[in-house]
Image (cartoon, rainbow, N blue to C red):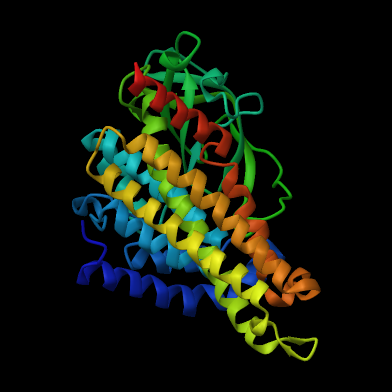
Length: 381
């Protein structure tokens, strides 16, 4: 057991930290206010290897592990959790192609995904299939060398902007075993997008419905075999949960840092806020909980990297704890600032809005408890 990062990990962490400080933090507030998708910034991140963190080097990836990814996403999220989260989704899609695509598919898409010449989206959720993802209804019927796809996906990050959509669709029986993964390219006849959703947070990335109306998708765009889509989706979500937990750590860390400075500067009742013991204790709890969450996330990342049997439960635990704690720390920071925390000038309200959705996506935290409890009860049998 070694809690120290090696020189390579420290180097990637520092690179991400500098990038976040110089190329994201100065603009994040404007991106949020103007609902601006920072394509050039994302491509600059890709040039540093952040668009294919755990993708195989022959296809342009960095070939790093899940812990390195966690370190990178935490640093990027200190500046803008919304933009860091889109990069997480993009990495998840690239990993699906690397892990489950054939050689032709890898050669066709991965080199352009790792440079972010192409942007990508992950399409699982539907209007009537959220937490119960296995009940999805988007249907693909095979006719010759194509699938005819009909249905709709909801709340898709990058919808309308991304070039590639990895979609879980029904090709067989009801339930998880009838689901297949298809890659749908932007511009495919029958593919369209809903209006850009107006959201509480995550405003630097577009979110829309993805709509299929007799959408013609080549069979060569299928990932794996028919019926393997749900398995692919769940394996991808394990990594996505680590990434989004890491984004929560980063956002909360910034709010903690801002609060430390504010408490030293702000005076009430004739003394600095930092001199009030009650507020000192609150700050101590924020830092302690954040550190505990980070340890859980890093452990889960290592278990996932090593393909341990308990990795799925560990990822669910880490996601549940870190995203709850991340939001709690940001919310406490806002409270410490009083009315100023509610003002956009102090940025904390942006982090509160951005981190709130982390408790919902990549599986709600209620579903995380379900995954954990089922694993525990299986162990008891």
